[in-house]
Each structure stands twice: as structure tokens, then as C-alpha cells.
Amino acid sequence: MHRVLLALLVVASIFVTVPASAQTSQAPAATAAPSTTPPPAGRKKRIAVFDFDYATVQSSTAALFGTNVDVGKGISDLLVRHLVEDGTYSVIERKAMSKILGEQNFSNSDRADANSAAKIGKILGVDAIVVGSITQFGNDNKHTNVGGGGWGLGKFGVGGVGHSKSKAVVQVDARLVNIDTAEILGVASGKGESSRESTSLLGAGGGWTGGGGGNVDFGGSDFQQTILGEAVNQAVVQMTSELVADNTKLVARTISVEGLVASVDGGQIVLNIGAKAGLKVGDQLTVKRVTKEIKDPSTGAVIRKMTSDVGVIRLTDVDDVSAVGAPISGSGFKVGDEVKTITQ
Picture (spheres, helix red, strand yellow):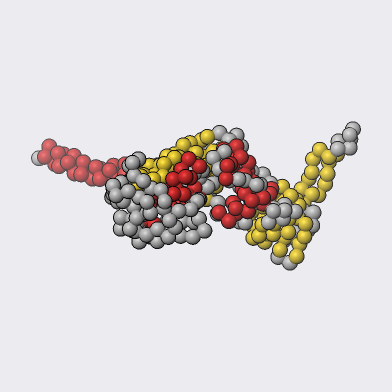
């Protein structure tokens, strides 16, 4: 009897202690769960896309469109559109580029020149620039006559084109260039071929009826419906994906820009530096005031400036030689205060 009672007590103790030990072992697992909060991301890398060089296809495109159409600009515009839609890079607006390019006398012959473009890139304050060339822009049938094209071309063909059908073929190449060294960081290419054939590169179902002033909107729905538009879009999409993949080869630059407060007018703080120094709208700058200058007793040269923080401003307007900012922290800003970019 005593043995039976002892056995029952042992069994009961097992059922009591097992849940307790299991509960103890599970507690650390709950507290050790990893955080699902993603780490903060850095700023997007900034690039500028230059108009593509189209010298090698200029004669054939002039015959096709009936005038000298800047297909290099068209390819560049379409590439910018795709890059902006992708969102990997921050792409400089064409308006800002055009102004700087005009001031620097950047010519069409410089489009594929990495060294010339890199100098402009520094002024634009970008991390890299994209230069490229159009190496093929036409059809896959060398025997088809594309001469005698007229402006205002429609979906029924190009004047002088032969009766044999052909596909549209477009090939483009691009280089991602370091603006400090003009080193080529990455290369990208794209080749597009229409899935349809036609006696007209600007036809085969498209309702495109031409343009004016030597301009063609490659991203327009009418042009995209033509077999040439189909090939152009394919080539640019492929090139875009390769440029996006090269993003890992590009390091975001840190540029330090320093200047002085030139005027304080209510909530507007005017600086004596602007776009030529690398500033742009949206930049944030710290404002400091020199409280004491330490001079070398032997030479009298200033060897250190003691400063105190005044605040931080964000730029709302920038021209070539000046900028206007509004305070986002601090007060009591004065003429002569020193400013410096927080980050670029």
C-alpha cells in the first residue's frame, strides 16, 4: 500500500513540474525576438542625364523624319522619365541643366565627352553624370530605301521607302561617369526591335503624324504605337535597368559649402553663395557666429575660430551667386554669420 502511494506521488510531481519548466524555457525566446524596424535609408544618389550623341545616325534620321530631328534629346528625355519612375536615383531637372550648359558653352560635340560633362556635373552638384550615344536607329533591312522622307509623316509610310517590310531596330549605349575623376563607373546598353514589320518605321498601327521644329516626343502615345516607337522604348527600358543596377557602384558625395549671411530681412536670410558653389533649393545649412579668433603669437595669423551655434536654415530660392533661406531652428541671425551645409 505504501509503495502504491509513493508511486502515485512521483507521477503527480512529474505532471506538476513539466509545465513549469516549459513555461520558463519559453520566456527568453519571446524577449529575444528580432526587431522588424528597417534601418534608416540614406539620401538618393543624384545624377544628371546629358542629351545623347547621335552623330553616327544623323543622316539616316534626317532622311526618315524629313529634317534634322534631335533624337539624342528624345532618347535622353525618355531615359529620364524611366529613371524617375523607377525612383532609385534623384535626377536633375532639364531646366536646371539647360541654364548651366548654356553658361558653360556646352556644345553638341561635347555630348559624349566624359571629361567635359564631368565639369558640368560638379557645378550641378550631382554624384555622377550619364552620357551616351545612339549607335543604331532605323530598320533591319539594309536594302530598303528610306530616302526622300517628308515632314508630317503619317502611318501610311515614308516618302521614297521601298515596298519590302522590315522591323525597326534601335541601339543605345550609356556610361555612368564619376564627376571628380571622369572615371567610367558603369556602362549600360539597350537594344530594341519591334515585334511587327511594316513598310514604314513610323507606321504599322501608329497614328503619328509628324512634329515641328525638329522635335519628337518619344514618350508620346502616338509615337510609342509606331514600330519605331516600340523599338525605342524597348532599348531605353533595357538601358534604364542596367543603369539602375550600377547604382551600387556609385558613392554619394559629401560636399562642404561655406559662406556668409549677407542680409537678414524678417524671416528671409540671404547668403553670399549660390548655385555656382553647389547649393540648391532644399539644402539645409548650419549658421554659426564667431565669438573669438585665436591668433598665432609669432605670426599673427588666425589659427582657430571659436564659434557658437545660431541655428539651421533651409534654402527656398537659389540663383548663381546668392541664396535665400528660412529658419527651421534658432533665432537672432545676423549679417556676417558663417553658414555651412549640413549634408549634400
